[in-house]
Amino acid sequence: YSELLKGKSDQVPPSVAQKARCVAVFSNVFTAAAVLGGSRGNGVASCRTEDGSWSYPLFVDISSASLGAQFGVKFSDIVLFLLTEKAERALKKGKITLGADANVTVGSFDDSWDSGGSSIVAYERSEGGMMGVSLNGFTLTRNVVMNRNFYGWEADERVVLDISSSNSSRSG
Image (cartoon, rainbow, N blue to C red; front, side, top):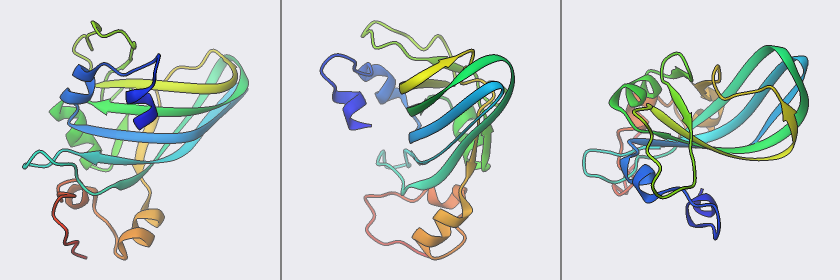
């Protein structure tokens, strides 16, 4: 995430990061397709709290299945900036489908770029080759096992994403 924000050539415009109500970061999302395709990866999400700080992390999964003219394999790092209250509410409900629950725009690294009213702005860096796949149709869901292992209790996304990380006490 910090490399994407502060990289030398490809930087997320500060306006996108400043507008974000929540951020979800995924590394090594695996995508493979030969007509039938699928993607899967793990990441973390955090939302701004009432005091303006960031919440504790919520562990989330990203996945998709697809059918069509597509072929290839790739690994991607994906950062999603959730810009609207609607997108934040969908994340806090435990499941958000990109393209259905929230419209997604693939971000440009141009400082003058505007999200055009999209709920989510996505940035991706990939290794490998893929033809015919987009971010629409991806689903984000809570990773129950990772959250339980980290928090020691069945973490509810509405609670975790509202707890300020600047508050040093964690309840469970």
